[in-house]
Image (spheres, chains in turn red, purple):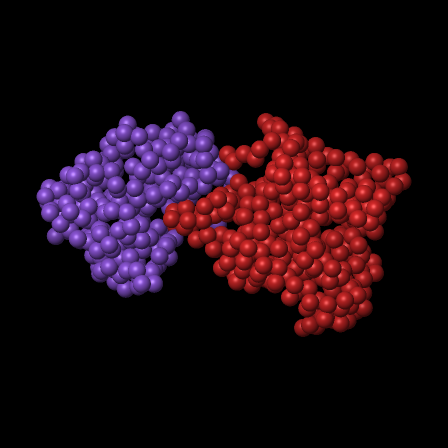
Length: 324
Length: 249
């Protein structure tokens, strides 16, 4: 059965696939790159949406996980290309699947540490403490000369995916698109699961969750870690898209941008991050060509969304969110 | 004598200079409804908070089902079978009535770390939850978000959740509050059957309900239990009359 929201979602997924296909057919690879950027940012925001949308955990530090994913790609490939072993004599790699696993595990471990401390607070304190941790990671990256420090680290040749020529823009788009769809599927499963029920209930009423005998802290920490892992995967893809990773991926601007994407698209909605990312990138492109101050206009739109369309773009298109 | 399900001994809780709980001892025996009454500010809520673990006592012990639970957190006490309702309804407002009860069923089963199976297609959650909603008379409201239920229905839903936990004791914090006379009467009838399930510690201002239901009554004034006894004993207790009941009794 197709509800209105499912129709909108399906349309969004088809559009995101059709646009780069058409662009490629007309010999406009730039638009393929734009669509890839949308897919990857959507995946990053999808990760944050698990913590923020489902769990109500307003993390202002998800850039840390995005950047860790990016640095995983950059560091592994730089070692592979220079044939210099890393610590413990481990070799680098240019294989995306391995890079992704490393990115996800590394970010998961960092998220476990950050979350274990941050989740003892809530509200504004949680926002501030996640921001503080992310800034620590940011300054760590800046002051680490081995991997470019402030200048960042170039990925000379885009990493590889078995059987696919990732140097072709459309092929790399397909990789990113499929990963995004898998991410959305995973999000959907988790949201409908027992864990998802507990996570969403903890957002709505923490005391209630505790009085039925579920530990809100453990549920939230698990949610925070899964959320960070998805965002890190997006970070690895993002580094490969730009063939460059720098501390700016770790900066608090990035954390803010991810939150903006979610609010634009619709908090907690399955396709909210994609809608938000599409809107954001389209804006950046359309207005960015006219004025350097395009973010001023983005700010106005954000203001409009917060004041008049709380459900974001998806709320406008698909109506209010429903819980079964 | 039968061992009490819940036994509180010499509980003390201070807020700065205020002694909100002043050496309270009381117990809850199998099959009984023990009402806790007292004027506003007597420390009833503070006491409930300590029993549930949302506040930690300064001294004294709380034993539940033969175990000292005084140092456990709220979730751990709930897992041991302490079911409570709140003075102001406390539910997951966006979730339907059914999903609220399913959350309790899921908690009772002890498994909230399933990530892939949709709860709405999990008969081991939906069926028991539906059965309980039928029992409390909310079956036809099952799909409505908790926020859209009437005040009385939200109270019923809270009791449904406590039932789903198969609690060994119920802690009901003013279940009659805000209910109309008709609703109060219905709820009184329901609570009367509930005591067969597990004993109830009932905090309540509605004296008609208290006198109709309670096997024993404890009167809390300024953080102290000034009397405990049967309905008649409390009605005829002169200290209680001056301190609290006034003309009502």
